[in-house]
Length: 82
Picture 1 (tube, rainbow, N blue to C red):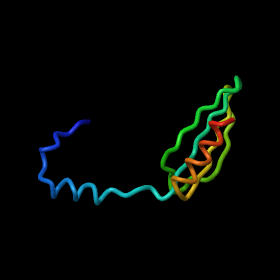
Picture 2 (picture 1 turned 90 degrees about the horizontal axis):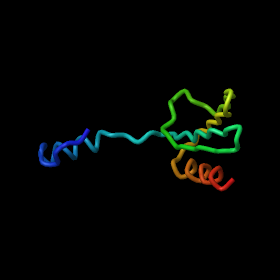
Picture 3 (picture 1 turned 120 degrees about the vertical axis):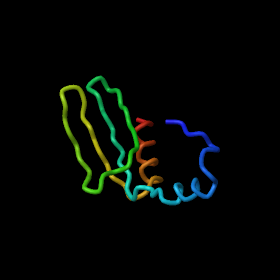
C-alpha cells in the first residue's frame, strides 16, 4: 500500500512513527534442504517462540531466537558463509 506523502500533516506522520515499536526479539529461520541449499531469513520473533528444529520431507528448519537484531544478523552471516 502506497500513501501520498502530503496526505497527512507532518505532526500526524510523526505521531504514527513514534507509536511504532521495534520487536524486542528476532528469529533467524534457516531452511537446510536435502540438496545442500540453505535459505535464511531474519524476522520478528513471537513472544512465545524459542529455539527449535523441525524436520520436513525436503528440509530441516532451524529457528534461533536472539535479543538483538545485530546478534541475529551475525548468526545469519555464519549460515551464509557455509
